[in-house]
Length: 292
Image (cartoon, rainbow, N blue to C red; front, side, top):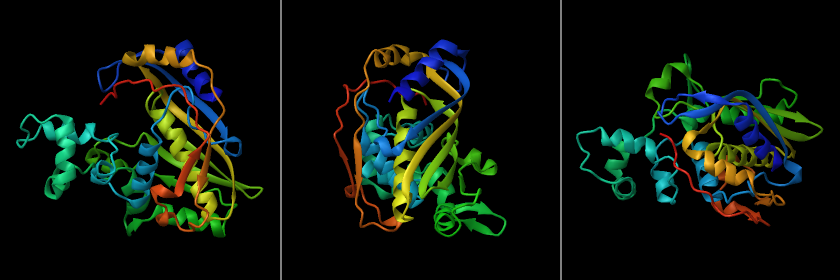
């Protein structure tokens, strides 16, 4: 995936230092776009191993409309734990538990999970329950129906940015809006991401929205086209610079292929077992700490 390595290099070469909400500090640029032809392979990084299990379960979690981390924790996915844990640490119930102990409580105690595992009206809620003056809109259901019945529409959009609910979210949506496009019997998707953690977050975002595009193409009887990733604030955290340089020193390998169970015809029916990645031969994992 030379597109991604060129993206990292662009930030290092053109970015400037910028303070940020997490007080970690970043090298930041504004405005960047990558394109991935999904017919050429599944765009999962090969210059470091990426945890595909987390990507798939998170995407299924979004599709369910769920906003509580219990579903993720129950399936061994930890990528959202830091935000509710930080909230829990400020509560009167906090007794010095580690984040691992917090996750175990989420897993074992339904009441605790209900109280401290919810993230507010984040992605899944907005996809499936976008609030309006006349009730909520199931945007995902609507856009799939539009793709099937009105594929030439220029309104095939799902929006996660609900301004009057931002204050209630553990983290305002970073990947905030996506649009589908049908041409020559192929489905493409463009994502607009307002804020992009280039090293840790973006590889997940590329794979997740590429997979979503493949899933929706299948249930709409279309072939796959492109995934187009448009980014606003593209940044590398200061504590990830050495990891980025290590990744840039590696040579990309051939992309893997994603096999999806062809029997699935409804977006809600997909399960983790319906996906199989083949021919994935990445370089070793590169660890880095998420900025919260």
